[in-house]
Length: 396
Length: 220
Image 1: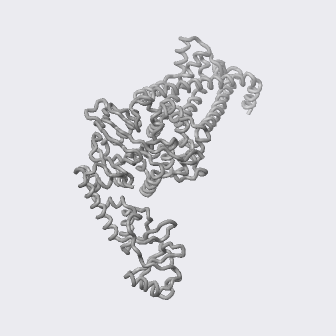
Image 2: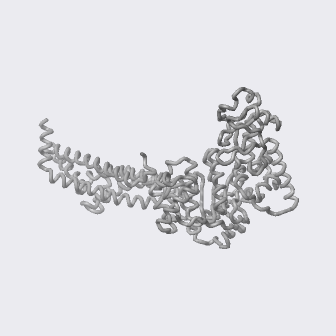
Image 3: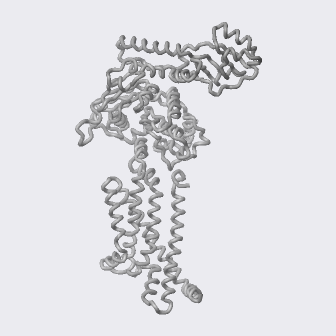
């Protein structure tokens, strides 16, 4: 195997960048100065035509700025050879942009081959990256893009962008063309990857919810790439800078904060628990002792099966043969409070079961807990705002 | 029945000259086709860089094909005299046109997002053209080559008017001796010979297209 250590991110600095197209009176990007800190995911959000994509494409000079300076790390790349610059910057576009006439392996190997790595190193790197994005190298290496699903293509797109281990990754609405379930999965995977890789990722999206979920920082842009607000998602949700941002955040800002908190970050509640084969009378007594109407029944491996009411438990042999409730509302420790609330609203119990590794029972979340967490976030954000801290630490 | 057996005797007796003419015919078509393909790719690549270039190339291809081959040959004979040269020029000209159109259409059909993604990864313009655009346009270009090949088979016969090589001479001599002995046999032998050659060349080009097109984009 090749070395698995990866290059960490480098900061990107845009200084007074302007892009003017001939024959247009107003510049597409008007004098933007912004710094993207190393190792963070920075989301560029704004309405279509605000210049967010133009701004991003000036980092790898797919669009040449009319004036201004671009620094990556401490190096001024404004006049660097664009082809060489781009080989050091990962680039992911919507729909992945895989070459249809290349196999998956050849697609990933594109940049390493341009950089003239030796053959064995490239072969190892391709397999390592396929592993990293959760595709079995044996199965997928020699396939053609059209033999993959949209989500798999997008994963290969990310692998290809990471191939030469660039410190910086540019992503242009990468998950815009996949279905909502796949998008959520790809987003979760990106976050998991970033925990390992610590790249500087500039991510363009028009989906504010995506920005809140993925971003360490969000830059909200207006026409001409004017930065209206540049802050952590918590701050933007709690203290939108002006009406434009408020409009963009949309209704339910408080609800959106729920996507910032994971189930593992809050205190879980105990439910009344019984196991298959237990004595039903004891289970009923236990539930009554802590004042519960329902009992969650677990199997031998601590996996939740279904809720049972005290009346159901009163039947003889109630715990002998308990069937799994396929509709049982369950979230994992990694789920957001938003997901938990969603499940809760469809459940008839006002609580949702939380599972950990191998789907073992961990506890339950109640509506009250979610409400408390929401108030906690809001008061913390209000406090931070009064302390006049320019930029808070990124969310752990 | 006698006419048919008479024809086979005619062919059998002249087999060596007929096969030599057939070889000349194919050789003329294949060589001019190759030259036309190279020219069309070069011109097509240059034309597809601008939108007006695309329009001019397509208009030129459409109008050029309306020129009667007989008229062009007559014109060329006046300029470069009779022989192989006017035949070659005429064949390259007519072969060039359908291929040019398909090069332009093929290159235009490449998804701009793919080109941007190639440039975004640091591929140079030339490398983007050679490794991405031409391979993706290749099946379309080869369709143009096959159309040209069929057309050139017929036009090469007419090139005999300018005393070019190939089976056309046989047909012409038959026509000029119409009513005389074996005149019909000569015309039929030349025509069937060209038909057979056209089928063989088309099959060969079809196989070539298959072997040179990536499995990732070929129709299964």
